[in-house]
Image (cartoon, rainbow, N blue to C red; front, top):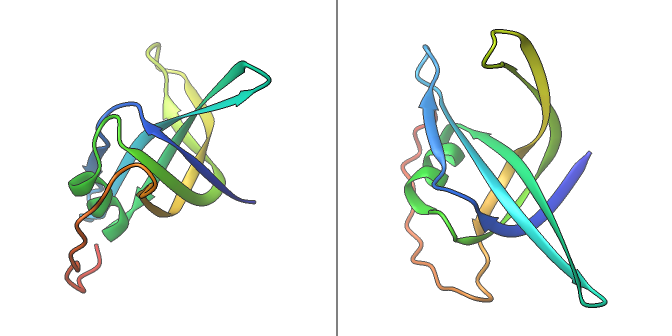
Length: 114
């Protein structure tokens, strides 16, 4: 299922690398909708891979207003007490700044993929 959200980064994106050297970036987005004077706040965990992951980690920071286009997916993780669990995340296919409220300087990435 494809989805698009627009919101603010809750913290700086966190980049890690697999044993094979592939980049993975995880980040969270807060989306606030106002209807009839009431605010509805939702948090979305997101992740990205490869050159997109590197671009996000190098370019975006806590508080930046961004868009995320991607697919709903499942991530497995281990809880603090050592149990396995899963969570629903947005697996990002495209991420960028929301240029209605900010500007960006764009530069081309190298063609290497990792």
